[in-house]
Length: 259
Length: 276
Ligand SMILES: Nc1ncnc2c1ncn2[C@@H]1O[C@H](COP(=O)(O)OP(=O)(O)OP(=O)(O)O)[C@@H](O)[C@H]1O
Ligand SMILES: [Mg+2]
Image 1 (cartoon, rainbow over the protein chains, first blue to last red):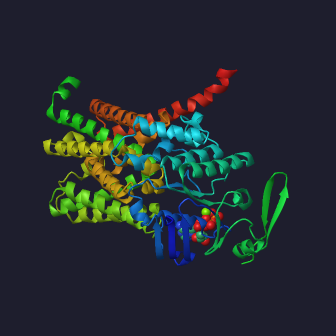
Image 2: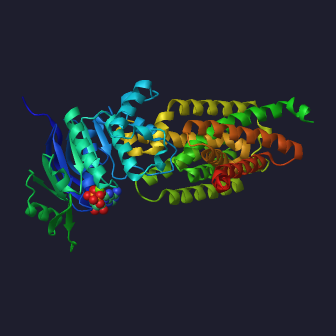
């Protein structure tokens, strides 16, 4: 039996108006893997996710998601769930949390169809799963940052994806909620047999579950954790990295870059 | 006097045309405000003037040349922005000024000084004939059907384009179609308010509805109702006191908008007093 390949990048380079964000990326992720993506700000983490999703076309190189071009894959709209880094662009937009989660079902409904009872049920079940069912009728802009984050995670789950791409899902969650969410994502991955790509700044917190760490800083380094070598991280960040442990929450301190 | 008016063909046509235009602009206006495209409405409508003037100059139906110009400018704006060449508002500012300037030159070149230029600038719905009425009804029907069919996609697009794209929504196609629709709506609505004021119809009803509801479905209903109320009220009022009809409609819309703003603000103003 051959392993199914979820994501395959070969020689992928992305440039924004001549500025190189990713360079010659070769990456292969098997289906069912849980991959953490780390790197300093501006390293190209979000760009990497977008290239995989097809939102950005690579300047050079080839992207395959489950063996297909992401452009063609998105036509079916039910393979990837995505949590953008800044999902709510207009907080005044008049939709409820449930409306937002329902948008995750659109790929299943297809053009011209209206949401049916089963779509609402699916949306509510996913909201329940991430613990926000009671917020269903609240306007999205009036929720707290952490609550909004859960809404968008529920929307990504509503796609019933095979691949879940999360861009810094822990932003604006408190430490407790972060732990909960890490557990939740791991459970969901096991439960639904997902491939998970997660951009994350807190390596230690996910080290427990992840299969691979992808360190990027324009170019790529791949590690098998644990243990996360200090040398590997320093290569990626280009500066010394330290871990401090106090209380229950591990912190990472990164010194200033000098470039 | 009102009874006499109502029995006259031209006034009946004006009322029917006005109602159709209100339904058209009222529903579009919700999406224009949601997508924060208010300024595009202004740009597209003003650029229609260049096309209309060209129609007069060439002696062809100004409807078609107007549509041509409006669509062209709308597409250019979209294209310039998607290529990242310039900011959207800059593109609008440039294209609509160019088109207006061309319009002024065309009018000057044209020998038909008897054309109803004033009507095109400020609207004259009392003067529409059967043919214009049919055009209005056809465009309104088509656009309303489109909005009804693609309601879900239009909301999704306005909320989050990237996610819409990922879900398989034909994003760029819909964006262009929306602009073409906007251009068509502008052209037929020119009869009611003229080039200068037509953007009011595409902005104010939606903005007022936004003040009165947080539900997009209801917003569409409210917006259409507001547009119809102000249009019919404006037509009757302007006939009664002999005001220009288009401007009266727009003034009523503005009054309504400020009232809706008050209705929106009122709860917070009164709350402290209610509690104590
Ligand atoms: N739309 C864009 N146009 C031009 N340059 C861009 C664009 N998006 C990203 N970049 C550049 O590409 C590089 C990578 O950006 P990216 O957003 O992928 O970084 P990131 O690793 O996600 O950073 P962060 O941790 O801050 O989210 C950066 O140098 C950024 O300036
Ligand atoms: Mg990022």
